[in-house]
Structure formats: structure tokens, C-alpha cells
Amino acid sequence: MMLIDDNGWLQGCEHLASPNFDARTAGDIDLLVIHNISLPPGEFGGDGVQCLFTNTLDRNAHPYYRTIPEGRLSSHFYIRRDGQLIQFVSVLQRAWHAGASVWQGRTRCNDFAIGVELEGTDSVPFTDAQYAVLHQLTLTLRAAFPIAGIAGHSHIAPDRKTDPGPCFDWLRYLVELSVK
Image (cartoon, rainbow, N blue to C red):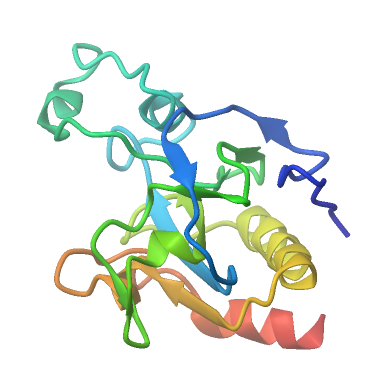
């Protein structure tokens, strides 16, 4: 099992600190939100996502980058196609991944959620390595926090978002969690 230290950092993975976070409001961290992202869209293996989350994205490096609205984004975790896990924000802090969102009548999901980005798109299946790391990460987060809900970005912001998309195998993920 992976371990989270007293400062909210997962041990045994790469840490790439994002400046895009702030303090959580009072209350339990009890929601896990799964996303997908690739920059440029549909291209895997580059450093676009890391640059976006650390405010170092060169908007002239690719035409798509100029279409990204100015703003500061982050996620707690990012799982690459090969299973590499990167943490950007301490889980004790509020990452800026969900935007305007609602879960079971509660607004501002960033206040009580942990965000996990999977390198991918809505139209490409995720890899076995990603599911394996997501499974272990979820078990670790559930051991450390009272995670009562797991949702896709599309569940908490259905008018704006579609991720993790139809290629995310919810049944596989949830069955693996129940087997432990």
C-alpha cells in the first residue's frame, strides 16, 4: 500500500509542486473525482499537462495551447499512460480541478474532493497500468480519508464536462475496488 505523509504528500511517486492551490474549507475530504486530460488533445507522453499545472506552459509551443483560457489549474494527481504517478498538490490543500461543480447537493467540490487526472481522452481506452495505479491510489486515499463518493468530472459538472469519458471502464474500476 502507498503511504501519505503528515503533509499530505504520497510517498513513492514524483512530486511536482503546483502553485495553483489554496486552503480547504472546513469539512471532510470525502469525494474522489476522476478526470482525463492530454495536451495537446490526443497526444500522449509530452510535458504539456505538467506545464499547465505548474504555470509554465509555452502557449507558442503548439497552436492548441493558445486556445486554452487563461487561468490556473491543478490536480492532486496525474497518472500517465505507463502508470507513472505525479502529485502536484498536497491532498490536505484544495487543488483547482473541478471548477463549478455539484455533488449530492454540495457545491464547490474542490473544497472536499481529491482530483485524479488520467492521461487520455474521452475516445481512447485507458491502459492496464493506469487502472492498476488508480486502484492502489484509491485504496490509499480511502484508508487515509472518509472517501464516501467516487465520481467522474462529468458527474459533478454535467453541463460542462464529459470526462473521464465513455472509454473509462467504471465497472472494471469498481469491481477491482470491491475485490481489494
